[in-house]
Image (spheres, helix red, strand yellow):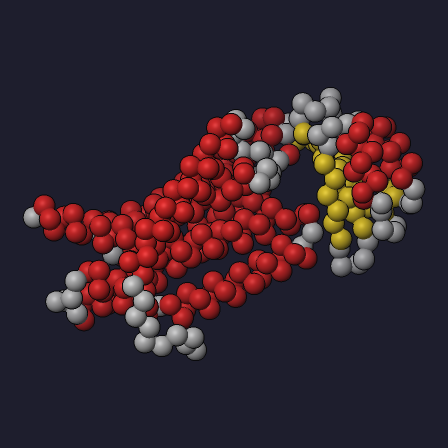
Amino acid sequence: MELFKDTCFDFLGWKRPFIAASLLLTVAGLVSLIVKGGPRYGIDFQGGAVMDVRWSETPPVARIRASLAARMPGVSVVEAHDLAGSHELLISTPLGTQAGMPVPQIENILAQAGGGYSIRSLEMIGPQIGADLRRQAAFATAGASAGMLAYLAWRFRWIYGAAAVIAVVHDTFITIGVFSLANKEISLTVVAALLTLIGYSMNDTIVVFDRIRENRRRMPRETLRAVVNLSINQTLSRTVLTSGLTLLTALSLLWLGGPALNGFSFALVFGILVGTYSSIFVASPIVVAWEQWRGGRQ
């Protein structure tokens, strides 16, 4: 199935506005991270306590949030539903906000809110565990990038691998910067979304690079710029179909997934948009610029 046939868009001619937008988002995110002292980590990374409360009917979430915010600043309430139709609240207390989870105070507030409820679980996450999770998340991201760099350097040439990894770092950093600008928490589910985006962006870049390699063999006399533009046009239908369908799914999660999936779906939606254009307007121009610079030196 092809949405576009025989297109001849000059994608490399449009690279400057997209690169300028990337630089603007990068600088804005970096300034936000510096001002806020780094990303806003969730309970998983900074430590704290999480209470899982199940209700027999729809709980008054707004009233509970207002009461907790007035008496215990820093406590968050996330609503979740399961397939059985039960209602649950995840009440989180970051480390340092309270001395542990103030269970009696929270139970008093829940009782005042009305309705039948039961505390299903109470989990404590220490600061050492949070630090270990942050370190493991960083290692996972770096390891995934290094593995894909080695694969692309072997499959194509090292400049292709370097361009793809730069595009992936670009996607990841901009997404984290947008989380900081939107004051959203980075949790384990967000890290899972970032790792998904790394693989997604890398796959999209590999498809474009593979077509570039094929066309360079078929048209050895054409300039690299013409070959890259032709290759992007030839893979345009595949890019739009894949990215569009995935984006629709992520938008559905963002709209209907509720607070529990908000961070995950937000990272997917923004990351898919950034990752799609980075394959075209970041990775490909890097390869062309390198070849032109090397040709000029020779």
